[in-house]
Image (cartoon, rainbow, N blue to C red; front, side, top):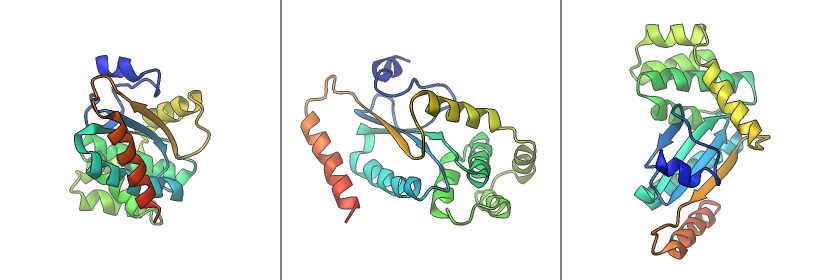
Length: 180
């Protein structure tokens, strides 16, 4: 993964299990260690959606789980169970949109609403199939200095970028506007 090699000194090394939106060839790569129950992670989720709209193909987002409670751990498990059925990002969005409703029955409802194969989802949730992946994310975060959620790592590839100043100004403008 040549793009990963170029950014490995800026953000933690990427792995094949990472949840990635966008191209690793993007100018801006943002990695978040997040928690579905954390209000600050929820605020970050909203900001990331704006950045994705504003920057389009110039932006790549990597999400890693950093659950801080049993309920957020269960939410992370449900996102990974959805990932097996190609619905990670849809579940990810639902979990952040409904942060106050992350009980097991809510997670089952979200899975049903996404059209997941329920017998598989329920089996994976009841047998905790995805705990190792989530633990790997947690361990990676801790190894890279994350102590709480959200924690971000930002990689900016400026090789060949003719207008880095404009990109950085756009990021700052998005951040400023999102706080208004």
